[in-house]
Length: 172
Image 1: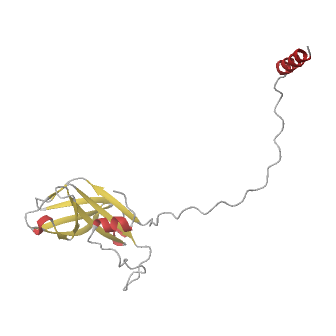
Image 2 (image 1 turned 180 degrees about the vertical axis):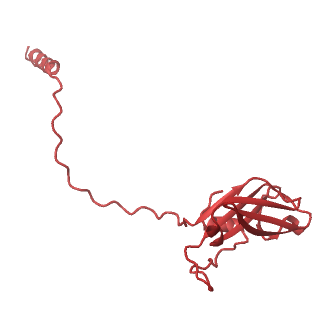
Image 3 (image 1 turned 90 degrees about the vertical axis):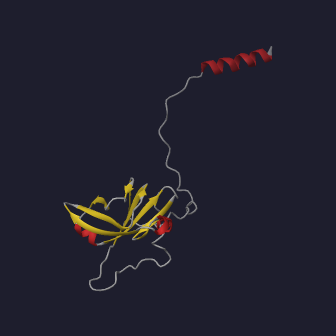
């Protein structure tokens, strides 16, 4: 009988309980310990831009790549041009020889109507390239009549697109 009364008391207590109103928030606890230092992020340069173009046919006289930018930006930037030859899955730096060394490519620049025109012309039969990439490195400082405030890194082969891509952490 004692067990029955105890069980009945527990059941009545559970059934009779109702949830009360939420009370006020307690005081804020003390600040926790400083967490560990996170990993070093990828080094980068906000002054480097990569532009990707589709197929470039250089079996004709020349090709033109255009980018919207100011004359000042054009003049204050280093421009690297690379052509991808899909047959060999290889990047070729311009100026330079194309696949098989049969054609020599060169590059020149002009500015009109808010755009820089990058002209690629050739000496030889020419090739059809699957895409082109232009990398622009804007100079923060320019020293008149002298060397730039920041020299090009010597550990990068600027004739090798993949080396430039890796150095500047550019996407594929």
